[in-house]
Amino acid sequence: MLGNFSYYNPTKLYFGDESLNFLKDELKNYGPVVLLNYGGGSVKRNGIYDQVVAILKDAGKSVVENPGVMSNPTLEKLQEGIRIARDNKVDFILSLGGGSVCDYSKGVAASVYYDGDPWQKFYLNQQDPDEDQKIIPIGCILTMAGTGSEMNGGSVITDAENTFKVGHVFDSRLMPKFAILNPKFTYTVPPEQMRAGIFDIMSHIMEQYFSDEDDNTSDYLSEGLMRSLIVAARKAVKNPEDYEARSNIMWTATWALNTLIGMGKTQDWIVHMIGHSIGAWTHAPHGYALASVSIPYYKFVMPNGLPKFVRFAKNVWDICGKDKTDVQIAQEGLDALKNWMLEIGLPLTITELGATEEMLDGIVKGTVLYKAGYGDLKPEDVKNVLKASM
Ligand code: NZQ
Ligand code: ZN
Image (cartoon, rainbow, N blue to C red; front, side, top):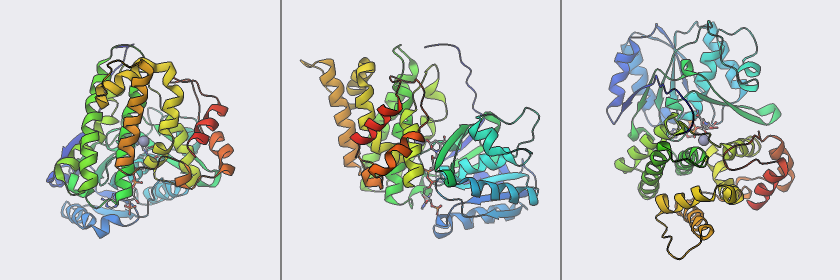
C-alpha cells in the first residue's frame, strides 16, 4: 500500500426490496420541510413517487417538490433548485432518482447558505464550503445503479451555455446521510441507461485500478468487484428482472465509488475527463461516453503500465499466459473487455454518440488533463484517442 490515508464514510445504507420501509425512521432525524428532488417523470410512471410521498406525508413532513432534474443536470437547473430551497427554507433534501438527481441535490445542499457564486467556488475552483457554513442534509433513494453518488461526495454539473461539464468531490459533509437501495426500483430503467450504468461502474473500478505498481489490497478488491459485475451484467442484459443480477450490480456500483477501492492508490480518471467533455458536446449518457473512448485510451497507456494490464487480463478475464508475451496477454485482456462491451451492447465509438470531426477540437479543449495513472496525456494525445474511437 502506498502513502498515508484516512478512510471515513458517513452514509448509512439500507439495501434490499424492503429497504424503503426504513425511510420513515430516518425522517425523524430531520426538520419538517423536505425538498423532494426528482427527474423527468420515471418515478411517477413506475409508482415509486407515490410510495415515497405517502411516507413523507405520514411522517408529517411539508413537501416542496422540485421535479425535472435532467440527466447530466445543468447549472441553470441548479440555480433554480437553490432558489426553491431558499424560498421555502427547507430543512432536508430528499433525492429520488439516479446519480443525476443525487449529484444535483449535493450542489443545492452546498449552495443554499453560500452568499457567493457556487459554480465558481465549488465547481470551477474545486473548493468545499467553509467550515462554519451551514449545509442542508441529504438523503437518497436510488432508482438507477451506476454512479456511486449514493455513497460519495461527487457532484457533476453541466454548464450548457459554455458546453462544459465538471464535477467536484465534496467533503463528507455533502455525502448522503442515508441511501435506500432497492434493486427492484431499477427494473424499469431503460435498457440503454442500464447498460450505461453498468459501464460506468466498470469504468470507476478501472480508473482506480490502472495506477501504481505496488502490491495493494485495493487492487484485489477491484478485481473481485469487476468479476462480479461482468457476470451480473450478462445476466441483467438478458433478463432485466433478474433480482440477483440487479442486486449485485447495485451493490457493486456503490462499492466501486465510495472511496474504498481508491485507498492507497494514486488513481487515474482520464477516461472520465474525456468522457465528461464528450458528454457536454453530445449529451450522451455518461456511461456511453466512457465506453466510447475506453479501449483506445487503454491501448494508448498500456505500454506504461504493462504489468497491471497483464494482471487485469489474467485475474479479471482468466486469460491464460502460457507461451505468450506480456504484450500479447495484455492485449487479450483488452480484447476480452471489448468483447464483453459488445456482448452487453455498449457503443465503442464516439461517432455512435453523434460526435463529429468538427467537434474534436472542442472536446479536447473541454478535457481537463493532468499526469495520472499510466499516462501524461497532452491535448494532441486526446485528439488521437478520439480519432481512434471514430
Ligand atoms: O429523469 P427520469 O425520468 O427519472 O429518468 C432517468 C434518466 O432519464 C432514468 N431513470 C432513472 N431511474 C429510473 C429511470 N427510468 C426508469 N426507471 C427508473 N428506475 O434514467 C435516466 C438516467 O438517469 P441519471 O440519473 O442521469 O443516470 P446516472 O445515474 O448514470 O447519473 C449520471 C450523472 O451522474 C454523474 C454523470 O456525469 C451524470 O451527470 N456522475 C456522478 C458521479 C458521482 N457522483 O460520483 C460519478 C460518475 O462518474 C458520474 O460522472
Ligand atoms: Zn462515472
